[in-house]
Length: 499
Figure 1 (cartoon, rainbow, N blue to C red):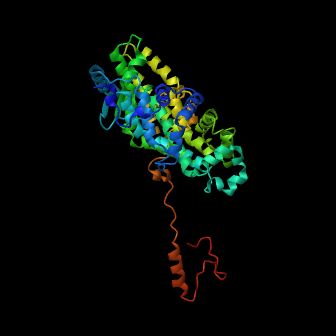
Figure 2 (figure 1 turned 135 degrees about the horizontal axis):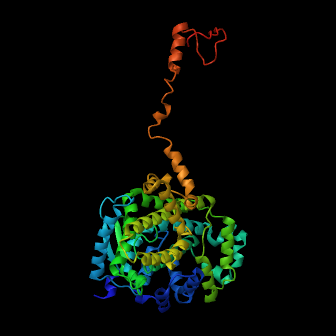
Figure 3 (figure 1 turned 60 degrees about the horizontal axis):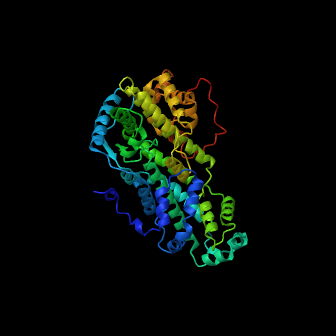
């Protein structure tokens, strides 16, 4: 069986121009400007296909997942390989032992043992395409709406557009070329295709970077699954002269610890998705800024010059919405979740392995360096989402966990997962005392609030409004009307009278 037999049937790459094939085979993330320039270089070869696409089928959604799938698999397949029987057996044995060691720690126990798999890069992509979709689509939809807002309903003939002077920035040939096109539909398809390309680049690069399914601080595969990418693990530790079984145990501890958090707390993964959706829905496009971006993108474009068209595509590909103040607050909460889970899982993994793995320090140093360096896949994903999933300083989470454990013990961390509102935000992660004070204030209120009123005696019983009204009618007869105002002739009661 050849390596190509493991690729899903998502289309034949042989029909793509050679330049497209070379680009997809060599894309490696890195500087976004360089990536976008490389994408722009495709224009001379695929300009005709793009024009045909722009006037063809309606938009399927905010992300063209067919494009994303093809790009991701093409990138992931380069240098990929399947796991050996020994690698699969070693991983299964390591996870079983890791779960046993973690039972002595403070992590919540999982409801079941879940699944353990050692996979190809392309198999990780297959799972991640579905699991990361709820994270990518809300942001892509917000960006698409903002781009569509640039296009008036009347197309190029819209009076407001003509009065704005934007058309004056277009060369005559460009105006004629766009004259008969549904601009709204074209922008929608362009946004969907561009986002699909970026999503594919992000997932394809992540497939060549991640060792396990929780390296991003959130699950990238279905809940309860522990997944290791065979070729990446081999490459990461190649040349370090480390025992394969110790490496497998160290990785299994990290993976099992993360899996416990997200598997034992069912709302945690959904909470991450909810925060990303809140972030996306909080977008507030600035019409003046968007108009300025459009001017910048189209200035100097010559439809007869592929180079200038390529530069315009490059500028359009860098289109991003600036986070608002409310989005920044949501982002702080999101980073609080991912930073906490990564740090807590690492703390428990190290504690469980201490004294058991002779090479632990060397293995942890390798993992620490990988965690501190933002990989190409993470960078492209951050650019795609418009947000960074984890805090800039990875040591912040470690410091938070250490401070909480030192102050109140490992069990105190469970308070963070008792309710979404208990999760620390970015500021509390940096200053753990803030979170400890907040939790102490919450603990001061007992679950049974009635205990707060012990020793105060019985509360006075006041007659209800109906009772007072009935008493008034009954004492003075139907001719006495109680209208809520004080009776001028009523006698003031003495201080000793009962009320």
